[in-house]
Image (spheres, rainbow, N blue to C red):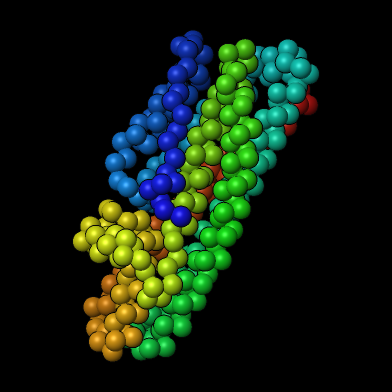
Length: 294
């Protein structure tokens, strides 16, 4: 799956001016998140960009939470809108988002474990040909991971269709519901981008296409062109080719180690932001449940 073709653009947000201070804060945060996405000119998705989006998304849910805790909002949602049907729909969406976020967190943990295992093997074996087995196992894991990612993307697509259908008829809904649905739309887009980041093609050792090679060489010259995942692919394939041709050098091992270290550090940052967002999504679900029992 090519990152550039899968990168998603968020829907344009245009909300009416309100006196409610939480609504005003939400409008500001929505615009910030939109600006972060628009200002990204690179053809790839990087962890820094994703962390920025996750941080902004957590802030959005925080403001939605404050808005929904308003007694006036809760009464309006339950008493005047089909006996809580709209709230029940929001609850179902919140469960699906929680599941998606949880699946992504598990994915990140597995990738981190694989990266650290390969780092350890590389330190022990260096240029020895036995390291090829460890690199092949890493790529094998990546291919299996991509199958799981495809399933997660399919679930997000289903949720996007459900949420998108309600976004087209928002003007008669309570303000909190409109805000929550738009925030859900952003969450789906960001989760998709995160999954795409980890699903860059897991190339077979020594069997890259010409396009992949060109992109990898470009990445070696400028780390901003390929993601951290792609940079690791390039470094590992370079090392494998050198070992296969019996001309491996210390610099090949060093580059592979550096790229793995960069990816490991990037993943650690993602873990923290995902944990924060997961807690925020969980709290949002609790609030919706409380509204149903209002």
